[in-house]
Length: 418
Image 1 (cartoon, one colour):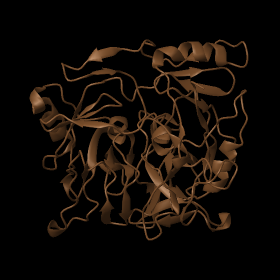
Image 2: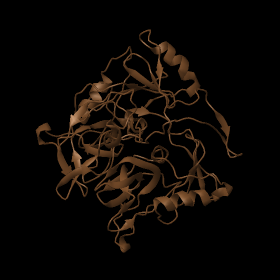
Image 3: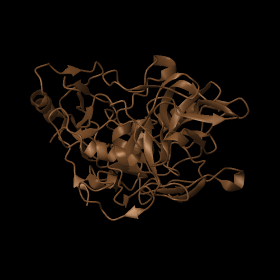
Image 4: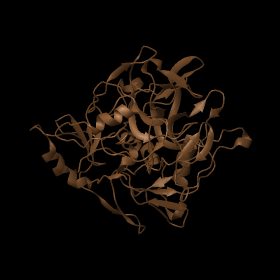
């Protein structure tokens, strides 16, 4: 059974932070801060929601070891603390009967059925011209808005579709048209978030979510061979504060995000671990007077990515400057930043239990045409094998030659309301 995590209203977190610091240093607030007061908005008679950045749970309730499905581990046992051990804001949707779906957790309203594929520029125009459901304020979602829909009960098998990573009781999600030469996974959904750097061969890149294989990747806006690339688009409206972090430096080695209600370690401990070790490290961690730390799930960790930054353009990881991440030297001999484990098993491949999702705060490297390059951008969410011999890694895998480290860094998280 998942342990329930209660996220408190944004406005209440101010007093929590003021009283939760373990020293007398005044909290430092990130410059990118919006109002600390919760804003209750009436959504045109279609329901009232509280704005902010509530993280929707991944919906993962099954427990896994490195290789198999297991019974729920007890606290203190191996593999305790994984995604299914904790329950956050459970997914909840309403079909409005007008080809729109409301997310009752985030307050976002979504397009139910996707139109034909289109380019990035066409998508922006498409949103401006849409009057779906009688509304005229549709937009192309940011990558954080779009990732809120990911459902980690999904399963994939390489380039084949299996169980989609989105709730198909509410959302229509096509797969790639094999008869037209596409792979089944060629059904990527576009976001409005353009990568701060470039990928592949210096190509302008936009982030998207693949609800067929359960990943965030940067996708080319165009290629020299094919011209401008086309992707699916799922329009969104409402809660324009969603995805905007409100970080506070608590002065004790922790950072609180007022928008999500989550408290983070300010830095990793410079050590890399396999997945089981990462879970155990967080569950046994006592820091800043708290002992309820955990390994974040994929949605929680992705929530603190800063998609305006990249090693290429800001000489920093894709995260707010309040955080301190360990620098690495990558296989090209360049200064870079590593991958960070999540508690979420990513069910893909022959053995669907043996991989877990990570967030790349540095370049998401891959090897193509025998050249190692940033193939999917800082801020990508991919997956690594949970275990292996450290001396055997890094390795490269898949059509883009995704680099596999297996021994990754950790940023622990806790509920700031506890």
